[in-house]
Structure formats: structure tokens, C-alpha cells
View 1 (spheres, helix red, strand yellow):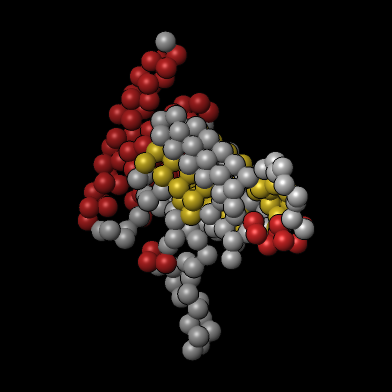
View 2 (view 1 turned 30 degrees about the horizontal axis):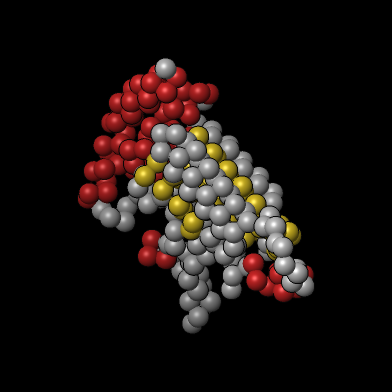
Length: 214
């Protein structure tokens, strides 16, 4: 009964936000690179309050992102910057998250005030005059947050996070993180592993070098 009621509410909310989504579809059809209209509506829906806001945000993104599950939670103030993002089942984002191009897999938790950037190559440096080049969509890299990952509050993520890993609050991740470990700090460093081993443990230095991909 609960799932049926929830489905009906989701469909009603999709109808409510359909005019917004249509303008985004038209923008995508007319210009592959433009996301100005999409960006405008993301700001509008981000500040819709309470439970109605949760349903309406989810409905809007289910119609405009590459994929967004209707069994996800998108917190107040959270903004998705690019349409090419994927949000799978049971994804949770806290309040005021900033999410670029990302693939959020099942059951991952994104803490409040976290930033998931579109890789670490969004701006190129002009070696001739030292100036940083303007943002270009050609430099976007979609990062992947794997299943069952927990990203702590205020973390900044620029790389992929492996399945079941935990990123501590305030950590800055600029290299890929393997599965089932905890990382913390700026830049993020190995803290411990969730994996139980029956063999002799490797030396700490060797473990740290192996869990963060180059």
C-alpha cells in the first residue's frame, strides 16, 4: 500500500514539473553544450522546502538527468550541475551538496555540504602566459561513487570511490580510492581497511600505497 501511494505521488510530481523538464529537453535538443536553462531550474527546485520539495526535486531530476531513481533522496539546497549524472536506487544526498558529472551507484550516502566535482581537469592552464583557461564541457570527467559508499560531510571528491568505502568528513579526494577502505585528510590518505584478511598483513606503508590508485 505504501509503495503504491508513493508511486502515485511520484507520478503526480512528475506531471507538476513536466513543463520545467520540457524546457530542458528543448535546450538539450537545440544545443548539446548549453545547460543554462537546466541550471536555472536546478536552483529553483533546490530550495523547495520539506517533504514536498524532496518529491518535486526527485521528479524533476528523474526527467532531466541521464537517470535518476524515484527511490532516492535529494536534500534541500542540493544542486546537480550537469545532465549527464546518474542516480541509482537508495542514493541519499544531504543538504547543500554540489554535484557535477557523477555516477552515484546504489545505496551510497553523500553527506551534507559535500562537493562532487567533474574530475580534476575542468580547467587547463595556458603554459605560454600562465592563465587558466575557461571551463569547457570537453574537459568534464564523470566520477563514479560506487555502491554502499559513505561520503562524510563537507568532503570534496574529484576521483572515483570504490565499493563500500568511507570518505571522512572534510576529506579531499584527488586520486581514485579502492573498495572497502577508509580515507581521511587533505589530500585523502588511507586510514584502515574494512576487509578481514586471514593472511599475514602487509606492512602499513605497503597497504597505504596499494589502496590509493595513482
